[in-house]
Amino acid sequence: MTEIELKFVLDEEGVKRLRSRLKALKLDESATRTRSLRSIYYDTAEHGLRKAGIALRLRRDGRRWLQTVKAGTTINGGLLRAREVEVPAPGGRLDLSNIPTVAIRAEVENAIGEAELQVVCETHMKRSSTVVTLENGARIELDLDLGAIVAGELKEPFREAELELLEGDVDSLYDLTQMLFPEGGLHLSTMAKSARGYMLAETGKIQTDPQPRNAKLVPLASEMTSEIAARDVLRECFEQIAANTEVVLFTDAPEGPHQLRIGLRRLRAAFGMFKPVIGHPEMLRLNEAAKQLGARVGALRDLDVVITDIIDPEQALHPQEQGFNTLRQVIETRREVVRKELRAYLRSETAQSFQIDLARFIETRRWLAPEDFEQTARLAQPIRDLSCKALGKRWKSCVKHARGIDHLTIDARHELRKELKKLRYTIEFLGPLYSEKKVGIFVKKMKRMQNIFGDLNDLAMAEDLLCQPDSPGARNVNAQRAVGRVLGARSVKAEAAWAHARELWHGVVETGPFWK
Image 1: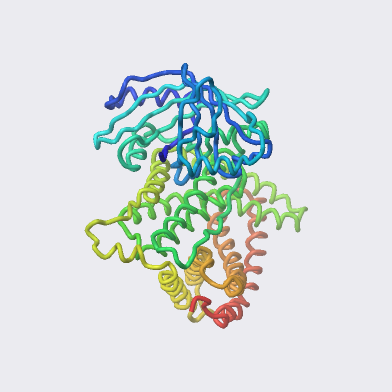
Image 2: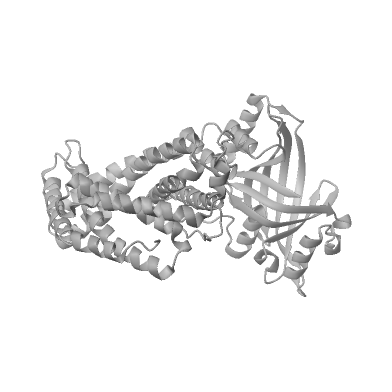
């Protein structure tokens, strides 16, 4: 059978809030059943099962022993899906011949080969289970696991809540999530307990430290339907946003807000690209929410840029100028205030709802509109057909905004920069459908053009941040002297770069759209 779950990592306070919330909701629920579970995970010395995407365990549930195989596990939008087969295991002994599904048994045997099985890790959990019935008739098992993950002599405490869909549609899992965690602060679990056990055995940890996540290539293929391509692109955007949200929440790494802002921008570009296919009022709402969140993230990112990319390089050139230390200090103070505000927002109900609703939109095909009788044909059209239209639309907009490039105002340059960025994201999404060589040549020339706009944008951002009555250091003479040096140097650099804008733009035009 296919197991469908949402999992959440909890701390002690989270456990208390979950229990209190469940009691307050007065949902139609079965009596809570509490029992002890001991799960033992097996693999070969070379971890052949894990490499094949298989988890093999023996579990003692009260007095019973069960043998379970999970295969083909995927996690998208926090939603874990896996093929699962479970049979009794008398005496707590493995018996692979007892796996009832022939195809899964073959996968297990092929992954093991002639190797011997050995214990990799265990989990020792006290599980409290209840079955919740929602108003729409959906039945969901809520399991609260409190215990530890063990690997040899290593042992780490772990708390997790699982929502497993027993009956009904996937939408109901997200509905119950919103009910149980209305105040925000939700932490989706993106690893199975078995994976944490393997990690504990190898690294001594049960979870990785948050690391900035760059955008990844989505392997689109020409034969894909536009709907499947949209789903895969949006999944990648979700993963980048979710991962970098964790980085911003738990580290001060400047790359965190940078990649989070990129993820939000890519999401909005994807919405625009696939609007003819999945355009829906919910998509428009999510797009606006992403825009608002992006503005908050951008406030922190801009302060990072001012410090590391603008002040620090200029200070290195003028070490005798004491105003730089003063300026940097007041901006760092402002940055920490903005960081604290952003973290509070990311833990809020509003930000959590955005993330859950985005996952729901992607994983439950929320874009379907029964009253739109022509939608089925649009969803089924080949992605290659849609890609030409999407790229052509972005290109046309860039050409329009680049007219009279030698005489563009500051505002017009800014608008052209935004259109070029949208085109760049669209190319990154759809590039796999075209010649890698042609795409590479076009993107290389676009990057040179975007570098110029980056200098202009940094200058405009620095002027806006440093030249207001309430700007950091506005009343400090030394700080203002440093501001003058910074803005003067950036102005010279930006204008010098802009002198090549026309030449670079014509280079992009001459290369021509690779999709035609």
